[in-house]
Image (cartoon, rainbow, N blue to C red; front, side):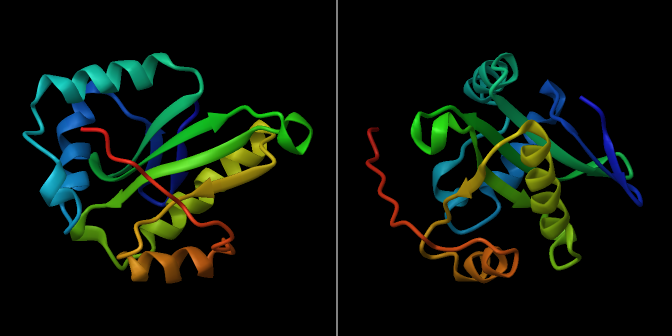
Length: 156
């Protein structure tokens, strides 16, 4: 995978040593604080290994001046609908608190859309918790539409 540069910003595949920084970003909001644990928990590394081994998953980090400042996971979904078109699901988008409000999220999502388009995906989709109203305005501004109602069932 080639790295993509925007000024001092690099998008790249996450590495095992990035996991603590990624988990810290996942935990750094009102939802993640209640559900994330110790960034050094072995379960995070096991999950990373599974994601890293799957050619249909990409755990991406945004790095600025050698520091991880953003993350997202791209999952490529096969399906029969839309003539068998592949979709790109964007999950777990996070920007480090120290860089929020600087346009990094927009750069990340634009990069993900370009990546999905280059792969031949017919659609990019994502979900966002109903409480994240600022994120909803952000995704609207990027051209996403809230076209579906999402449901989740927590199993554990």
